[in-house]
Image 1 (cartoon, helix red, strand yellow):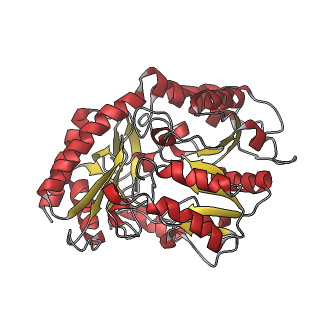
Image 2 (spheres, rainbow, N blue to C red):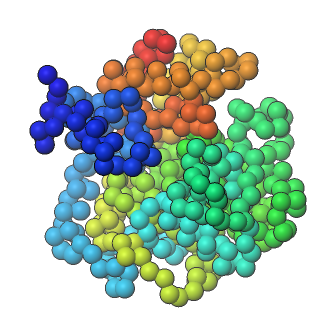
Length: 435
C-alpha cells in the first residue's frame, strides 16, 4: 500500500499535484521525487517516514541544521511581537543584523541593504556598481550562477540556467579558473594564472575599456564547486580596479563558515571586496538576501528605493539566531576540521574509482566530478544520476551541479561530525561500487 502523508495523500498523489499546479520548470531530484515533511539536525524525513542524512542542506542553506531550537525560538518570539514593518520604519532586528554583518565581514564593508534572496542581493550589487563607478559593463565568469532575474541571468555563465533572450546588455564573461578543465590547457603548477591575466585582454577587446565591476563567487556553486588557485583573485581585482571597476563578491553559497575557519570564503584569498552579497545559509532557511558595501559605495545609491519584505524582522531574527549558533559553537572551525576529514575520505574514493576525475572544494563544500575516462575527461552525468539513486537507497541525500551535470555537490549543515562523514562516504562507496 502506498505511503500516506499527513494530508491523507500518497507521495505519488503529491507528485501528480506538483505537475498539475506547479510550473514544470520547478525541477525536482529523482525520478520519483521525495516529499519531505520533517527535519531535525542532520536528518530529514519523507512522507513515508523514511529518514535521510541530509548532505546538501537545502542547497547549502540549513547551515546550523534542521529545526535548530534557537532559530525556531527566535522566529516564534519575533512573530509574536511584530512580524512586518517594511523598510519605511526602523526595526531593531534589522539594525542588529546589519551591525553584526559589519562586524563579521572583512575589510571596510559596513552598510547593508536587506532583500529576500541571493538573486535580489546580486541584482542590487550590480546596479550599485554601475551607479557608483558611472561605468556600465560588468565582468562575470563562465560557469557562474548569480540568480534568476534578467540581470542575474545575464551575468550567469551557465546556459541551462539562462532562459529566453538576454534583455540586459553590458555583461562580458571571462574564463573561469577551472583548473581541472583549464581553458588554456595548462597545468596548475605552471600556468602563471593565465585565466586571471586574460581578464585584461577581455576588457581591452570586449568592453569600452572602462568597467563597473567584476562579480564572482569565491567557489562557484552551481558551476560545480570550481575552486580558484591561490592568487587568482589578487590578480583579477588589481586588473579590474585599474580599469575603473570594483569587486562584487557573491558569498551566497560560501559564507557563514561554510569553507572552513573563515566567516567568508573570499578571506582565504586575502582580497577585500567593495561589495559582498549573502543569502541561503544566512538565516538557516528563512528567505533573505543581503548586499553589504563599503560606505562610500553604499552611500552613492540615490534615494528613494524600497523593499517590502527586505529586512523583515522575523527573518532578521532568524539570521541573528543562526549567526549566534555559528559563533557560539565555532562552526567555521568545525567546517575546517570535519571538512578536512571529508576531503581525505573523498580522496580515498577517487583512488578507488576511475569514474571520479576530480575532488575539489573547501571545508564543508566539496565536489566530486565524474568522468567516463580520466584521460579525455569526458563528463559522465549518467554516473551522477545513478549515484543519486543509490545513495538515496542508502538513506543519504546529495546534490549535483556543473555545466554538464556531472558534479556531485556535498554541502551538509555546518554541525556535521566525523560520524556523519562516515555515513555519507559509506553510502557513496556503495553507490560507486554499484555502477
